[in-house]
Image 1: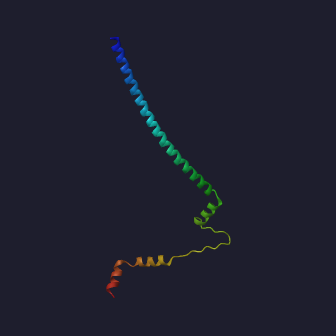
Image 2: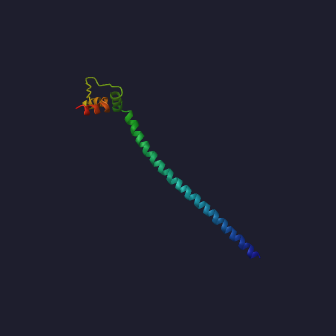
Image 3: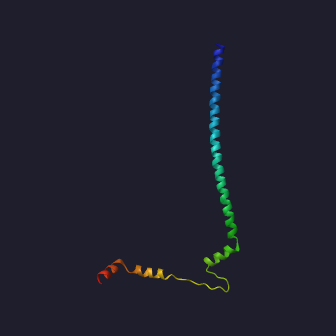
Length: 111
């Protein structure tokens, strides 16, 4: 009887330890997956940091200030002349749009 009771206790202990070990294994697998995901995010964020550092250094440069002054503030350097080239095709397209489809239809039948 003593052997039977100790055998049952040993079997229960083995089952308990096996279940506990399985839960620990699952938890470890989940944590390893999370670690891999976070390492991927870290590498993406480090690349973004490098890009932003380059952008910051460009924005703080004189070239950027000059570009903004020319494009947005319409400024020029002393002695420079600004030339504006207008596209004639764009202007003629606007005239064609002014003539509606009804006028075009009339002009076809009036010929």
